Length: 255
Image (cartoon, rainbow, N blue to C red):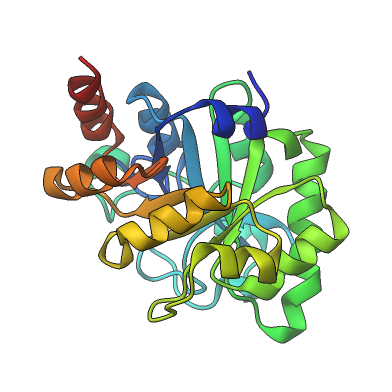
């Protein structure tokens, strides 16, 4: 598979599966990743958290209750206990006993199937460098650094990543309400990409990104009118919970 940097520069538009195909399977699980690949996503976005023993798992929230049958803070749980939890039945009975994957397991599965977007959540100050170190240890051990995009609302994280690993590919996610242009965030963080919500997408932002050779991504595009807006403005990375729909809509546009 082509390296991420080449893929992004050479591909006009591509579908990013938000937490996998999270509209058709429980988010951030192997089932959602399998569905996303089958539905034509070229990149899988996933979230990471640390366990009590500093293992990196694929999980969005810092608490367990919304998407598992567990309770409490993720950070206080052992990996063994977390992997006993049911992370699927909340979505539907079809996914009973779906488990929380480790980042290493997800990367191993996605190797040669998809590019990966690891979103790094704003950390607690005590975990700031530790979280970066553990995520990077996992990515480098999997030899997936050339296939992985790192994104975050926490722009200090991106700035530090670029300072330590200038070869990495990063994207700044716009903090809601921040009116700065993509080029301004790129100067602050060193990122190559800018990501915002569909509600914050403007032609001015797209034009600024293109002028400064930055690619732009937009989340979360689940309706046809949202797709039409982003497509017409020239957005490159289309983030969705339903990759099959976007794959079909893109095909119809290109027919």
